[in-house]
Image (cartoon, rainbow, N blue to C red):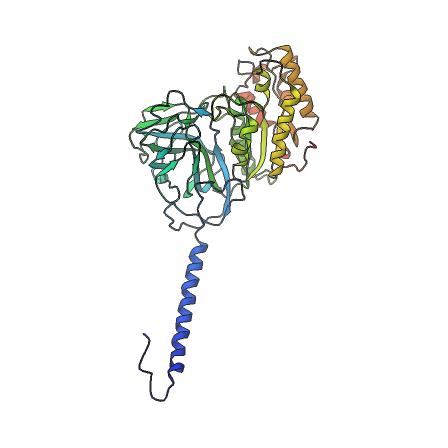
Length: 464
């Protein structure tokens, strides 16, 4: 307490107040030190508008949406799973998912100590109101049940409710959670009202679940009596990882999307690539790239041409590249397998030069962001209903240019490794799913095995 009596006899007031001032200074310094220390333990959360995506999202620690301090964690934000929004789900325009809980099942490529998600309302016609979102590690494969100790409620800008505008997306705050690699994760969200057509990814090759009412916090899975083969609203799961330094984005059409792979088994070629990276790291190979792998393939996707609608269903590779590749965290490499639908879906003979120019445009955009562009040759499709000799000639011209090194930084020649040696116009039987266009599980595994660590880590660039 400050004294006002002037102190003891013969002592000037100013001299008696100096020690008090000094003590106040020391106290103030101590308080400031505590504030600085606490500030160092809390990182600024991801803004729901842009999510900090595409930058070097290196963070020193984590926070919850309520802005409470969490245990310090180090690492880099990388993509562990992703899916590209394709269009509006048929028959959902009147009611959306109003009054129901959607539980998406996704599979991680790498683990981390914190997680965040992205929700998309790209194809909605009104704001998407989400009043509850949870994230949990699944209790088992192909199950809506959650590991009870892992269930976390997600927030957006510190709030449990988020309104995603029509045509927009929202990125959640980060939540501390030990997310394992190579495991199923459940992302559950409840929407009390309709936003119009449900933004979805239609060829998930994975079962997800639906419950009537609000059951985001349920760990038993019992209320989830409905099943769907789509991913709804959810387009990304990122993790703060100390086991990965960056993200590989697999960008392509149905062959990347995993059409004809066995559902529920994660046998798409990007899944197998993630398996190989993890296994190699576990074996102690220091040359193995430390990358998460995300799959943004869209069945039927083309380099040059959008689908119908506004916004377009199945937007072209050129129109979605920024969103699906450049918008991911810490992307180091993009693997592009695109072009066969430009050939098959063209009403006239496709122009190989136009397709190649489109592919080179993608590569230039990757280079502008410091991303290495790996490309594949186009697989053969003789025997498919769309085959003609003229289309085969276009495919060969495109592959010849890709092999010349004038398109991509490096080439994975899946055509040469997987075509029938007695008839190069068709897939080898063991790699053919039976439709003479899409690989079998064995074919997808072969595609992933053809990608070497040199493809992912090399420094050379195509002369475009």
